[in-house]
Amino acid sequence: MEDAPLIQFGRDERSGPKTSHNDALVITALLANYEVGRIFIDSGSSADILFEDVYDQMKLGDIFLEKVNTSLYGFAGEVVHPRGMVSLPLTLGAGVARRTCMLNFLVVDVPSAYNVILGRPTLNAFQAVISTYHMKIKIFTPSVVGEVQSDPLQSRKCYVEAVRKGQKRTSDETHKEVSPSKKGKNTCTEEVPEEMESPAKVQSAEELLNIEIIPGHPDKTTRIGSQMSEETKKEVVRCLQRNADIFAWTPQDLERIDPKVITHYLNIDPNIKLVKQKKRHFGPEKDKIIQAEVDKLMAAGYIEEIQFPKWLSNVVLVPKPGGSGECVLTSEILTKHALKTSTPCHK
Image (cartoon, rainbow, N blue to C red; front, top):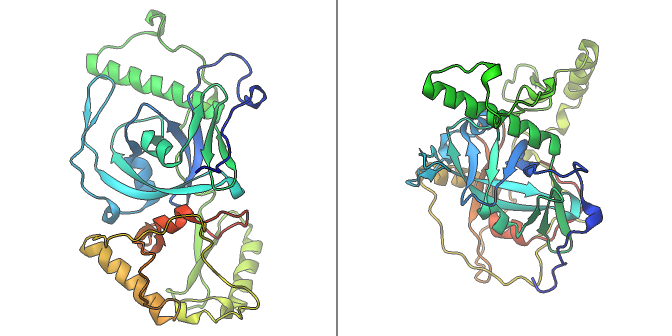
């Protein structure tokens, strides 16, 4: 990256508390098409951690979990055995300063104030530079320097919750109850606002309702928001059902678009060295899913088999959110080396 822009922090870039602070870097990012908060940036961690309750809320299932024999060791030497490892796309930044990388997360079942812990593997993958003083992370992109702002309020909420969890574990281990008047000087006694009481977890902006676009066909549905008034909801459903012909239920239903209107192409950086990967084996269940997706695209005429010796990249299986069992195919190398634009993409 000889022509990459310079990463630097200026004095006027400091954000968050104006007074002296020791807050941790806690951010919000897009993980597997979910907006996930309470992501702790820990440069002292040699692994990326996804906590089990968050993974279960994503409804990805166990098919994407790979067994690992690695154990995690905590600060006090405690041993944690991960449930497994999962590869998921993580997006940092926004607009032209956005980057996406496929990362391996260890899924663990331990109580935590955080949803995710990003360690050195993520920082190295994004070529990220962190500054706790500025409460920012800066990352390399092909054209500009991207940045992610830490949330000082979330950082302090997580700190208070972590202290409480630690105190509870200590109390459970000793089977003793300590009255508030006998707390030691080092105990966290700061008053916690009501909005800090409950942790923020991965969740949709609102509950979605399934509706039948074609009545009597439960396989032809879509989802709408549940917070509309009954009158508005009925009008939206009627509108969707009147225009049922615009929905495509299979790839074959999608009509071709004249190239004069729009053309899709892979916007790959021309300066990137061509790569030819060896064939990767995913296991019987994943191979079956990949084959089904490829067959669908070939039957619809979207892709065709060719001999292309200069560039060969394995697909990456990315589960769709919601627990439907559906997946999309992407290429980690193509995603990494594609030139980014500010055009919003469909999630």
